[in-house]
Image (cartoon, rainbow, N blue to C red; front, side, top):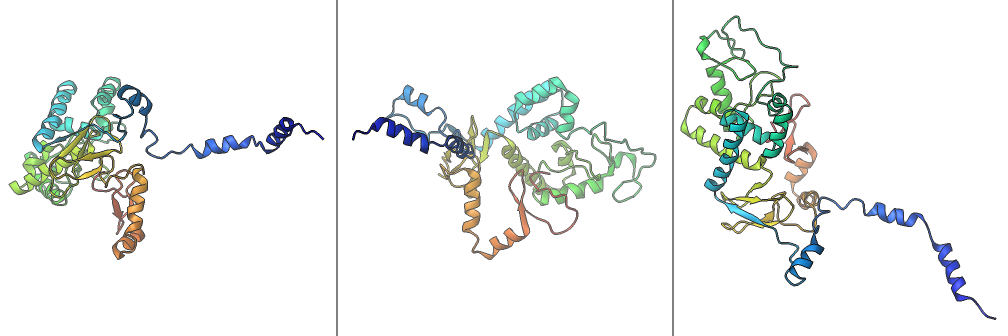
Length: 319
């Protein structure tokens, strides 16, 4: 008896075929993680350079000293201040808020210059701000009557005496706050420019700390810069396109991931390695306490502990 093997094979294939299989496989491949573009452009690079010369881990970066990085930051600040017609200290606050992306700032300035200053927290929102009537010269914090020339305020016109401003700025700087120094009025989001804060700091030691904290905040907010995590290392790493790639400091030889500043972890994404490091430390009592009593800030991933007050929580780096 003869058997048609072709027809038998086709019949079995038709019986085993499941039209949902392809859809399930596509769904499984939908979430590649934070590094879906890790090897984007590999094929074209191999064609241009040759298979032997291509290195998928190669990443262009530059190591900058403190003076070099400060000069680069000041260059952005000076050019933006001249275009926006604002002071240098206000220009820095705007750059920090928009992560030093000058092209985005200029586009927003052209579309709505007033809204740009409101979003950067250097001008009050006219729709929500209620001007305060200053019939008497008294400080809203200590409630003391003072001379008019001793009352200081930001663009929001919330007036406080110089003594209260000095204490406010000194306490925040001692706590490690730089750009985050803001108005003392309740629910006022305005940030204080550095040229407003410096004269209020009582000694050179605090002014030096404030300069260091400002520089730290400027670098950490810049989308192309990262501070080297090496111990007491002042170097700054600069890249053209920020990615989760391997960089190495040329001063202390520290190797780390540019995106999260943790040890280099390819091909694992930054979120996974952060969870893994937390899990590895779970056997310590400190890690158990942190897990039970703290939460990560959704913006900067710093652990925050709520030990009182209202439910509105902000980390020091996001104020």
